[in-house]
Image (cartoon, rainbow, N blue to C red; front, side, top):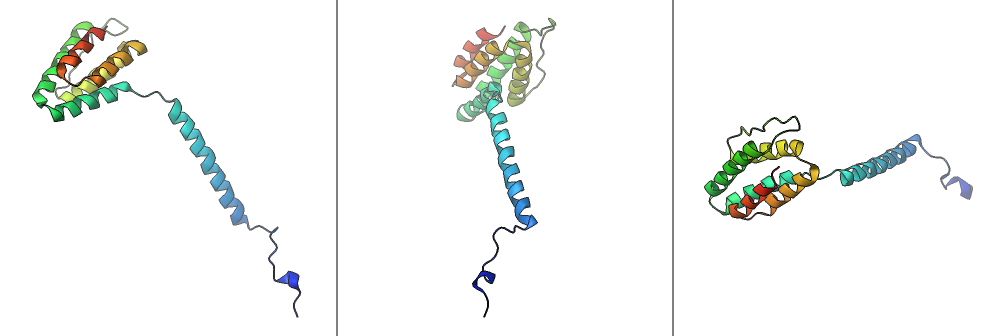
Length: 140
């Protein structure tokens, strides 16, 4: 007859694999927490939203209207905005989306953060080119 204690596994003995799995799980949890904190603290680029809005509106209305708007926007940027070294900004892209991204990327470097955010928010809220032209007054 076998003793009753011999059929019950000893729970105090752990295999090394158990500790590796627990360690990996803890490492993933800590890494995920760090990534979550970093992503929450990273400021969102409002210029991406503005260009996405222009593209959405171009799908809803005649795209030529928004092409003309972006041509005027690029002309206004070229005429009004200079870099910190007092050099003119030149927008060279020829397509609407590329022109929008280039302009807002260069404006982000040239403008104060508050002014850039106001301009990008204004463009992101525009539902027609007339509303978008109101944003030109925010160019400095």
